Amino acid sequence: MKCPKCKAENQWDNFCSNCGNQLKEKCPECGQMEEIGRNACETKVKEAREALLVYKSREVGSWRIGMQLLLGFGSAGVIAVILWYTLCVYLDCLTIKSPIGWKLMLPIDAFLIAFIIWFLKPISNWQSKALNKAEKEFLRQNPAEAALLERETEST
Image (cartoon, rainbow, N blue to C red):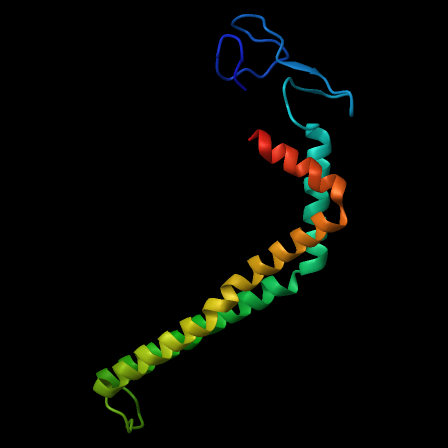
């Protein structure tokens, strides 16, 4: 915290250690000592943020994260197999002769890897879109918390 009077940095007590100016006062809403000049009660803002996080986790669910991990690691495994097969064809270490030579495998690899990346690109935004949608819905359903969080973001 910065003292508004003398501009001294790193002030953590109720009074400035440099000039003695009062930095915190008792909040009329919650009774805790909070910074003077704040736009919203810090305790109420913290409670609103926690309620938003609980709502997001309940609405979005952890299965989406699991699905993203499964698709991500599964795709990485497919890419690894594709590259391993190409390397084996190049080194001629397969017991069965490949009908496709390694020179033809390189464009196929590039196509398959590009396709997997193209397929995963929308999925990477899936979680953030769902979280944003849940946040908007929470703020719509809870106008008091929405106003509180909006006032708090205006001060920062």
